[in-house]
Image (cartoon, rainbow, N blue to C red; front, side, top):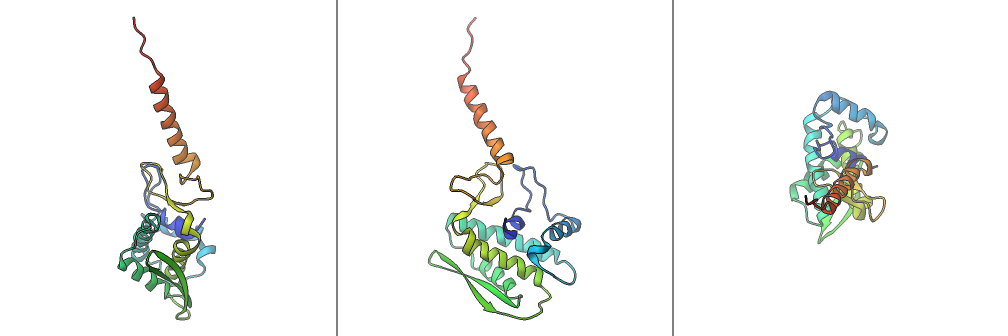
Length: 183
């Protein structure tokens, strides 16, 4: 799974019964520890407000990618600004409906490596691996995104959202089959 996708899906989702993964400092620390291998090393305090702003930007970019719509310029500026904090960084170009990743040389020993790593993962997900596979979960109450493993995958979780959708479909069919008994 993409760390960018997992980051975007830290938002509270009533349909999935998932709480906000960045609600408290402890939640953020737990999430960062779980993804330390993908994000690499970072020093200094955790930029809580910046992480929450980045999550909003990421979700806006994912929504645009799924809908094949051009994102707001502020989203592109924000993600590319954060990406520049790395020694080399990806820049997201989005012109005439085409999106691609461009590698650019940046600063060395960035103090903001954490945000830069997340931004790089977002750009890779939107411009490369998620070009065709990034989707929004089709469960009506779900707010999560997924990278589809097959062309038929429509739910973020087969055992969560998928199971609820199958149960609801079964319930609707069963109710239609019920014939009232006349006395």
